[in-house]
Image (cartoon, rainbow, N blue to C red; front, side, top):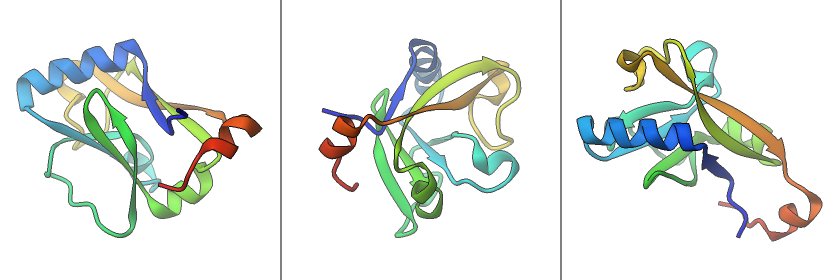
Length: 119
């Protein structure tokens, strides 16, 4: 099965730490400028999603959404959520940890793209 979003081991470690502190989590990446272009981590339900958001999958048992307009640009890529030192988005839960989530990506192969169904 081809996944639209996955996480590195470092990202999964940080997700587990944040889950222990905050409970169930969710992610959203909007594509706006500044904080909006980074994957943002919230307590589950703290960010309201709607028809303008696409559920790409789950990382660390957390739903990962992307704004539909941004998805149109990224639909041919697999998102790989990683962690790097630094300050994350102002409202993202990882900020106090001295780490931030970062989106890396790779283009799907033709075979993978053929297996994908629209979310």
